[in-house]
Image (cartoon, rainbow, N blue to C red; front, side, top):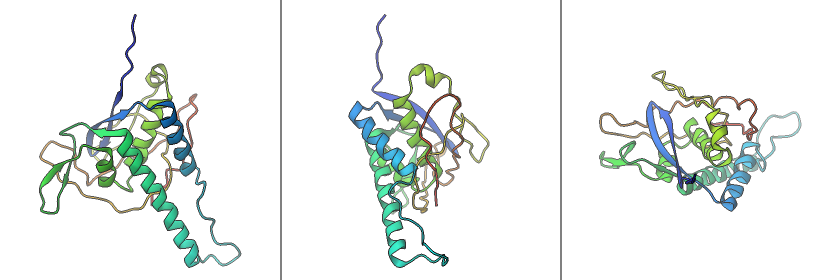
Length: 203
């Protein structure tokens, strides 16, 4: 009996409506690099310390350091999406400066559309699980992603890091996913399976 390893994993996330994505099967060096960044940002390693002493007032230097930390996290997230995620044609549309619908096909464009929203953490965790877990382990998971319409998949652990808050709005033809309502909510880690425990904080 022969076995064929897929080059891309098919996944679905729900943002108002289901959106079909594909996640790349990483090489060992790619996964180790991703895992290192994923867990570092999730645990807040490298984040600037809060103000010391009794006065709870952030200095200009601390604010700038925190902004740089968030920017670095956002840049890493977008790079990961560009490298390891792609969108199935026809699933998602954005809007150009003239109001015309344009298809979202790359992971980087997906990250731009939903930057700062919980679905980013959800997809990052899917990148990790699809590449880390065996097919047998994946079958024990039930994915859930709660949307405004009440549709659901299985519980997801919280995703990594903090990201800036600006929310993008996407325009799409009737029947396609719209980017205005990203409502995926990270859940809890799965019982019996060891996964990173990132904070999933989104400002």
